[in-house]
Image (tube, rainbow, N blue to C red; front, side):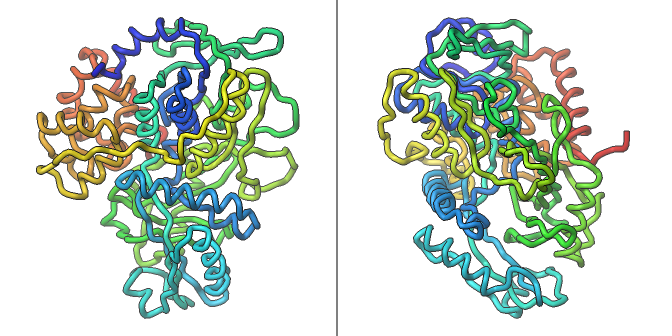
Length: 527
């Protein structure tokens, strides 16, 4: 097996630029990965280019929810909810260990909205679309056992229902792995400078290798843009619709500081927006905000001091006895949502619709907006628009998202570890297990991540920089204090040679990573 790493990238790039492609996908988030996956499984000659790193943008900084869109029912968008619920169920069945059920609780307070009857009615429709009953009301005495620590003043009871949760960056890696196994190719660190046109038709693109500064021209019968908040930068704009970048930020706490077994959904007292407190990767997350993001998209998004206060206030509102303070926060993250807006003046960010848009011009299709949960359906919609451009029809390859995973014996790993690794690594599981047998099955203290997973990522997951490894291939930079600074010496021993870095390069990468973490993933510091 050829290692998928920086050395492979250097060798393969000139040859990939010479090929004649059916489809080039621009953007390495979940939407772009999904498009590549669906094209590759149909035998299309397809390549994905990502300007920074896979999942670098929104797809590593989301709220990690794979949900059916309960709030869309209240707006009468039953078709969107039905599609989302069915895709959620598909992902739960096909990728356990990567997409897992998550119990949600909506506490009901005297005079609060929505009350248990209204909320129960919405959930009845939600369950009908999913094809199974998925909710139950708990009176106060039972709720206290189920959810200790909730604000008691006016509490009447709570409704419990289920959606799902994932590691969004690992979901992107799993989808990319499926695409590459079926013949697709993917490169990170490739910034598309411009689309190439002949007679007003897109015929390819010019891209800059961000590692070397060299530029390469690529030709393709069709280009699919799935660049999220960057979608307006290359496409031809013919109407009033545009991307309105909205920032959503989160706080992460150690689980011992606010232990929760369920996701708690409630309305923030300041603006009546829904916020969440939920368990993720052995920690507790508070999110999210919804604000205009005026900063340049070339800069990493980061939380503001006002957002920290807003989220801490939300936590104090729902869990007053916990007395959570800023000093309890392990890390933060902020993502930029690519919301399609019609430009209406005065509309609040949370009032913008969350539907996706597809813009088509000769030789190019641009996808904007959409939900993580429905990435497969969005990919099929894009391919349907691209197929005539390359002289193909979109044949039906079934409705599965992931190939079945052969699970060899894993005697040294617990059932939970086996499920987790199978879900996250899919077809690469057998090769990963060989590395685990070589390196051992020890976990990084305080996380579920095996040390062998770091070695695997360094060898096989196209890591170009240290933040790729610690913020996206693994989530150690979020889950451990000070961005996992205390573990860096051992990480260096394990990964430096596998990454092909000399001592000077490692020192440079470590310094850059710690500065990035302090600037964008910790609490904001006054400048």
